[in-house]
View 1 (cartoon, rainbow, N blue to C red):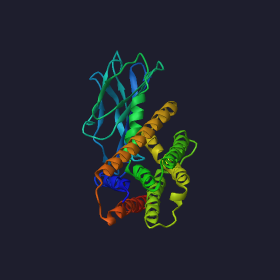
View 2 (tube, rainbow, N blue to C red):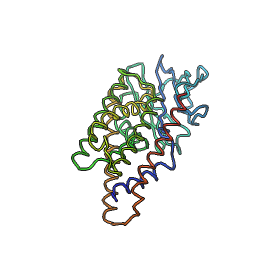
View 3 (cartoon, helix red, strand yellow):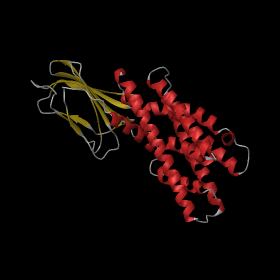
View 4 (cartoon, rainbow, N blue to C red):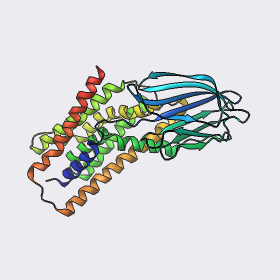
Length: 330
């Protein structure tokens, strides 16, 4: 039996059983604009699933008083809340911004503050780092925050990893594997950039359904390979990786679109987020190869039927996602 197959199956079981849903980890967004001296318009965007909204809220210093009561509405899988506040003589400079309830969750919150002076302050808050103090004297771009967001998106996006998993199972040979993974990377980078920059607008729900279908396709290709039947992916893996990589790029773009970034932030955000995605992908590939190497050292004699389990397990989960996501579109 191919020891890589067993290693990947173990990962699939561990990764799939707890969260059958993919893309559940979405960022929140706190956008603050200074409209008059020390007065600010606030937009608070928090992820939601149907009528269920995460119980997280931003808090400021006691000096910041609401001038207009908050108004909320649901849009695109999120709750949008707006209000206006006055922060006294000093404004937000030196004020601690905290996201209450963020501890214990699995999401990040991007905070962006635009001052009337033109200074822009950005910060990515995380469950273990829920507070930061505003410095209005200089701008900053949360480079590591965007890279981390990209790494988290790929490592927590079980559907994307299952596709890479299928490629690793099918492709034979080091150089062909490098060519295939590179092709997948180039393809999803192209569509990630096109979608994020606004050149292409593809509805998220159909894309997610097709991504699930791409995993199901690889599962059937793996079965063909095990039965020594002709397999398109086995013969031309880099072409298959490129074609489906274009679709996966639109899926990656959904993570950035859900943040709702201003146009001025998109180029740098796109760059750092994509770097994070590639780093996360390389971490996954390295982990799989390391487990495969370790399994080879153990030289465990598995029953012959075990080699068929990964393909059918991955295919079953992908089929479930296909049905679920197609029903969701209706």
